[in-house]
Image (cartoon, rainbow, N blue to C red):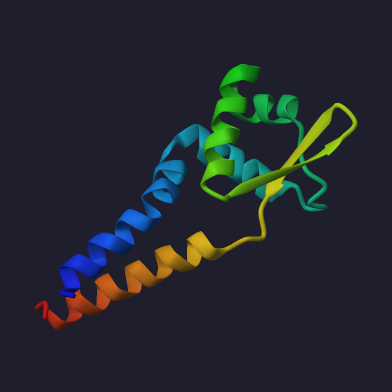
Length: 111
């Protein structure tokens, strides 16, 4: 397989992850979750304050982040607590893509 085809496949594999990271409101949610030093998780109202978004809008963004394997949640009774997932496979895929692209750029040519 050519380097182009491999890169295209690898980029396609991380496209949902990149889309999730690309939105400023989702970035604000990620930063707010990073600030949660105790990693106890945050509820939607806390994320509403951080993003200045409505409950449905925050919930939508959380779903995108969950689908991209960036955020997860735990339920305590009727309350959901959101936190950054410890699954880093998507980050590893992105790192691998960037490393390969960088190597190709350094070589200046493709196989």
